[in-house]
Image 1 (cartoon, helix red, strand yellow):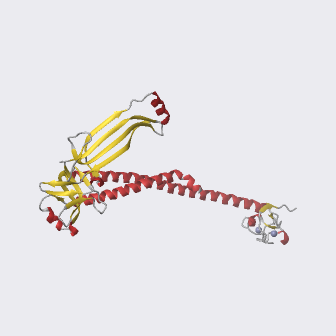
Image 2 (image 1 turned 135 degrees about the vertical axis):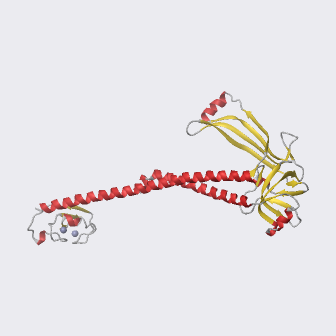
Image 3 (image 1 turned 90 degrees about the vertical axis):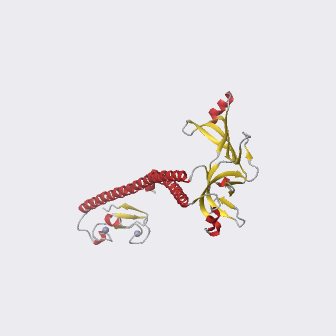
Length: 344
Ligand SMILES: [Zn+2]
Ligand SMILES: [Zn+2]
């Protein structure tokens, strides 16, 4: 416990660092899994040969595949709230509040909070001429690239009361940002996911069952791979940095422990030396030629020098009394304290 208080700083650093390290390892393994999945995913065209490709796989399902095509709604498309001429299949409306907040360190910093988000979607397909694939569960996509249709910022003009309130509450309103994003009708995108064909012949792409993400993006497979590789490299750097911190903190704990052991050993040595010196001095000061009655009952060499309490027996020399702490050797009563006895 005493040692723990000496290394509390290192232990806290090691604890926090291990948590971050664990998170990085988890993210890195996820990133590697996606990279592997994506590297082996075939790039297929939406055409007459696709059916034959699917037939080669069990249950008519390709676990991870890259497909490119034009977005086409199956029913009525969603019309933009801000621009009537724009239609799409997925719409996201976000309202963000921009504030200047006082941080715990006392500085004011810009912060953004999402206060409202709505997503709408309508069934759609990726098509190429007369061939098409339905995209299922598009909102579950990990990467969903959409066009920004409208992005408006309405600044607030604060009055005197707002200023006073802001000073005390630590939050000053700056304004509201309203944004509309849409996956537009007719855009050319890459879909990466699980491709399957039902008995009726309808093909669909959806989030894979083995934990890999669904991507609906304007990027190509190679640029996605590059992005994943750079985030994998970044995670590796983080791993090295936090791994080094963990190793340094552990080394410091071990170093302090060894140092403490050495210090203890040194202190014990000094104590033993002092005790031996005292013993030596006592031996020289002792009377010689004592009768049996005057001798210690344990060593029968030195005179009786110590009184045991509460029983009151004077039966031990000082040297032997150091090793007898439990019961009186004469009456077996428990020893509560010892004191020097002066017999004249
Ligand atoms: Zn003795
Ligand atoms: Zn006794």
